[in-house]
View 1 (cartoon, rainbow, N blue to C red):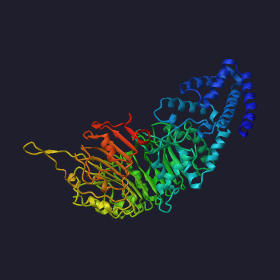
View 2: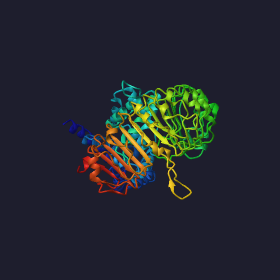
View 3: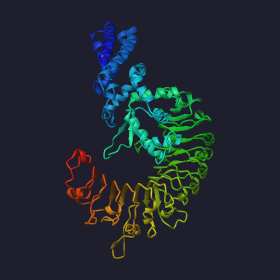
View 4: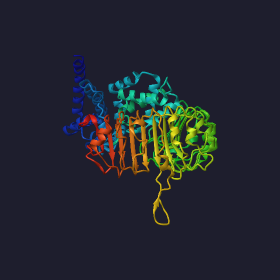
Length: 618
């Protein structure tokens, strides 16, 4: 009954506004107004947006002095319709006039129209007026009802990202850890708390998961444009960030360079953003001594002066690298000399240089970052070596060297990182390099939860080296990648393998608590003897990608993986197996992903290579 009464209160106002529009417009234009209102609600096809916008842009020519009044009336009318739609629906997204997650997926060609229309409606000031409606008020209530101040601060971080951006959860959580928004709590790590925060934001419909083909778990998320507008308005009020229109640079210098710098003397966070591919942000204008966070939103070319860079002595978060999910997002530096300025950032806790090109080495001054907890060097493809001074970073909890293909070894001293929880891209190379760290040293890392190892083509592995992995009691996720090894021919033309690493496959022992095992490019045709259920009793996820493997054979007396729920088989050209045999070996399997495994027979996977137990016959 309450909803009916509220609806009755809105209807007279709606009727009044419609009557006003009829007086101002002819029949054809009045029909356009109705269409425009519907478009604001997402109730017309995206392909009609451009036509509606073009008609709307011509209102001044059509109606002269009445154009402004019509625009205001449309905005008010749209707000009223939103209120009515909210009453009619119990679904939070429908209530706010928001499309479903599926319609927002990237790659949808209609999404281009939506983004363009959103910009043009913004130019006309319609969205700004709509933001004053009760829809946004209700969205603000969702923010106010968040359980902790820290969770609210985490949500405000989304205000810096562009509309419809797909954001990797990992980089978000690293930012939150750096700022101290999430910390360890009891037995839970800060990263685990960060994932809990993301789930809570999703449960409150403030962000939504971004699913990817071939993945059961969404590693990225998005924020609906309307929710983003609410978050931006709150961030402005809280002076969390300052925002200036991208189309209107704040200085003559920025207009020439195409760069946009966002900061103020009151906000302690700044972002690097550009309106073109030319020029790089001017840190001299950006700098102030109280700055805590510097975040690179979309600047592709970084060219900083060392003296200016070194004055940012209170920074706790320096995110210069890549945060987007696309590997093609290009960032490069003109000169790495500015990294010498790191020596003054003694409060820095999170440093990301992810995906930045032309960084060949790190300065010795990195040893001054004594409070650094997260160092993200992922996909620095030109990085050739790590300085021995890296061993001074005793407070590191996360070190990511993934996809740094030119690094031949990791220097000694990593074993002294008593707080280290995540180590990715550890290289086992030629043991003749005296300064290289070995697996034996990693045994000291008793808090290590995630480890990825790259075994170089010229690696020399001591006997029993891999057996020491079982001493990492807290290890839950392990990835091992073998480099492709060339086969040599003797004088008689007979090929022989010189791969001593393959021999080491006979002796690998795992910690009993291991939950996830990811094996890449196994250099053998038969499954190694350690890849069997009794030696991995608690394993829940098994990924096998690439390599020579042609069959999986386990002890026939106990061939079943009793706890494996997720299995991925990718790029295994020689692997042969029938579906019925695999189901017997994995009785608890819930999700299977198969990609480019042409010899697997009768597998009931869909076109994307996925099979899920809940959607298929067991």
